[in-house]
Amino acid sequence: MKIFEPHIHLYARTTDDYERLALCGVRAVVEPSFWLGQPRTSVGTFVDYWAAIRGYEHQRAKAYAIDQYHTISVNPREANDEGLAQEALDVMEPFLAHERCVAVGEIGYDDITDAEERVMVRQLEMAQRTGLPVLVHSAHREKRRGTERNLALLKEMGFAPDQVLYDHNTEETMDLVRAWGCWAGLTVYPFTKLTPERAANLLEAYGHERTMINSSADWGPSDPLMVPRTILELRRRGWDDLRIEQLVWENPRDFYAQSGRLVPPTVEAAVAAPR
Ligand SMILES: [Zn+2]
Figure 1 (cartoon, protein in one colour):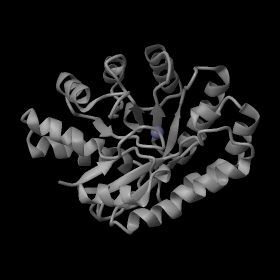
Figure 2 (cartoon, rainbow, N blue to C red; figure 1 turned 180 degrees about the horizontal axis):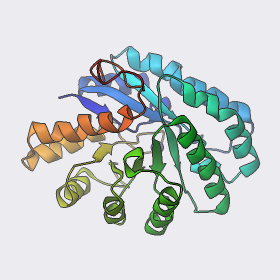
Figure 3 (cartoon, protein in one colour; figure 1 turned 135 degrees about the vertical axis):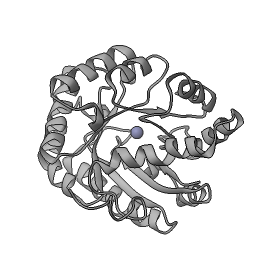
Figure 4 (cartoon, helix red, strand yellow; figure 1 turned 45 degrees about the vertical axis):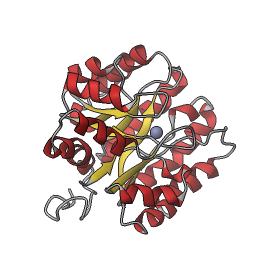
């Protein structure tokens, strides 16, 4: 079965992980812009990071026949050093023009501050100017309030639900995301966030339409194989391959195809025609 991993920070992982993903059937990945783990001190570190996820990471993936795409942003966790964040935004837009940049993201709230909102709004405006979809990360704290505020902002700015992937949902947020109709991401983690069992429960409660699962694996305690592990859980529950492939291949492909930038073999040639 083909797997499209829609949210993974392989920049923070070893090359062995690319091999393990390839062995499990992962054929395409999206590497979203992440934070550094410690405060950045100059705009050059953003520029080098964005260049690395579209350059070096693409090459590392290619060595394992994985089609790699990326998304570009100033991460919400880096928005509260607002002077530096705004400086980074001043130089970010040209990165959105890259042929493998498939969304603006991840953006959203961390602590739900006004600075985070200003930084997010500027990036949402860039998404509107470039016609790219957006990958929005649910708030780390106060998830439900953050989600309500986030979805209200997206609606107010005129985003269509199709254009938005709202990620890291839990039992607290799924009804809000379903009520609006945007795409939903479920992040499966070995300890925190969702376990494969909780993700499967949510999929059974809310259906798998407009939904995708991801590992969001990074340099913290996480596991790049959480999508295959969740597939195993779904098989145990009697899900057939057709339904699973919609969840782990077709849904992420259809969301990111809105960028007009997915290429064969991720999409068939006709679907890959530029906008
Ligand atoms: Zn992430």
